[in-house]
Length: 120
Image (cartoon, rainbow, N blue to C red; front, side):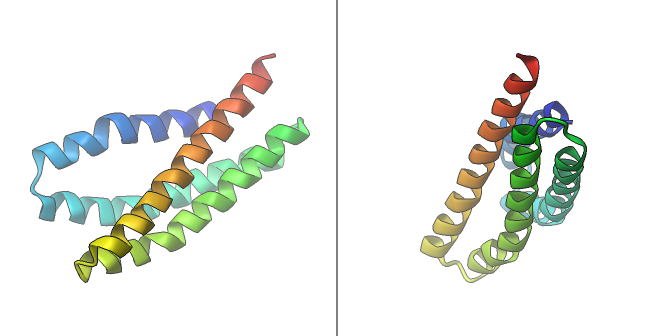
């Protein structure tokens, strides 16, 4: 399951997001992202939670739970990012969006660590 979560995250980050913003206008890309991210965070958070619940390795379980909490944090951070964007508050948007990106990078690192741990 960790491979699936990491794969979805990498695919969205490297393929889908750049394609969205290079193909669609900012208005349409933004509308898509606003609908997409709550579902993305919820589904990946639930899969991460399930990973934590069924893992037989304590470290891997901890990674699953940590990722689930971070997806929940991102889910609650999303409306604040949207409000900053709606207010054209570039500083607040950059801060919140940057935090969201850092959370995603942390999750990817944790997931990779868990995958490598399971493969040893």
